[in-house]
Length: 437
Image (cartoon, rainbow, N blue to C red; front, side, top):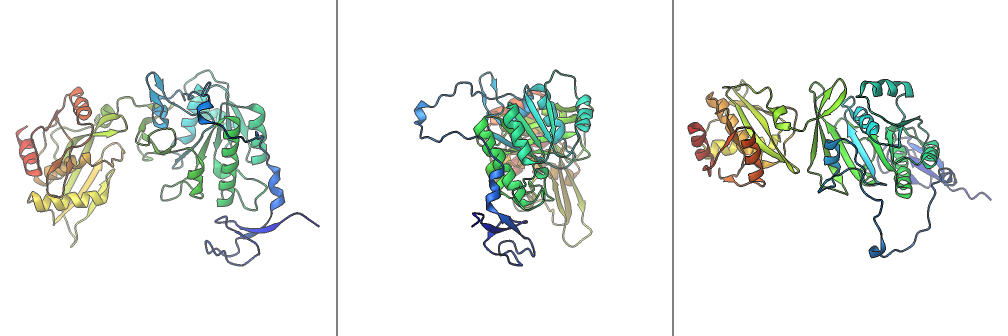
């Protein structure tokens, strides 16, 4: 009598059933259930150690320091800043890097791999020759990078166990498949099971594994949501296709904060680190133009200045348009309502457009005052002093509220030769003080 247990797995959502049926009760897909023999799961084997209970006071952290990626902006997002330690990868962790196609994920990882020792780069999308062509375009640096072009999970596990690399890059997780599961590469079942196997391998071997993930139309990583729960760190590389600026943002980090960002600029030799973001975002600012205001914002531990632009125009429709790039649209609607109610400005017949220059997306409320003043400047067609930098949260009563890290924001503004508002307590006083600066 066979010991194999036959189950049926939905190739779309991964739900399991004991008998075949035409429609998956979980996701509603038709004809998606595939026959699966559970005994075949034993093909992919990972060397395991015997589990035992350990007193946390007896655990030693010797030789468990972070691995610096060699790229300061990347280390900043990974976390671990303390004293002279610039942070980096935690040994045995799993990092998921997502981003739009062509945004520079593979280029960034090749740059990091070239700065580390004992790295294995596993590619399921490109040949070794194609990767070598891209690698040759990067700045020359000594590297013992090893390449593997493979999509079979069983083979990948064997190679990692044999080579024992410090860091392994899997580009990308959607191209990897396991013969144990009856679905095509990139399906929810394959992505989840392959990521789970690689996660277990990382914890057992101490190898840091970086997974590259494709994204969907809404910007999230393709595959099941459990993929983000399986990994230790989730990073997104953001930016507009037709702009050179790239923002590396952390959305999950078990070993550090998620409020840090890394800023890069795409060049012919790869992604270059931007150590002075304020200079980059203000480099092309025009003088004596209405609707332009400089704001001081804080991301993680770093303050920098950005230019906020506004444009108003008489609407040709019954309902005025509101558009925002780099700023929350709902927050913009709220600020416009406050301007009309508390400052007496008529925007009911005006289309309002907001743009945060440089492709950076600002979520903190400290930029509220800059948004309001830029709209006021555009509406009145009056330029605001080019040497003025503002920050502050606007309340529903029109009051200006204090924001965190005020001293750090002022210091960054003064370093670049800007003045800040000192006396204003509400919108009307802010507008009056701006006129007198």
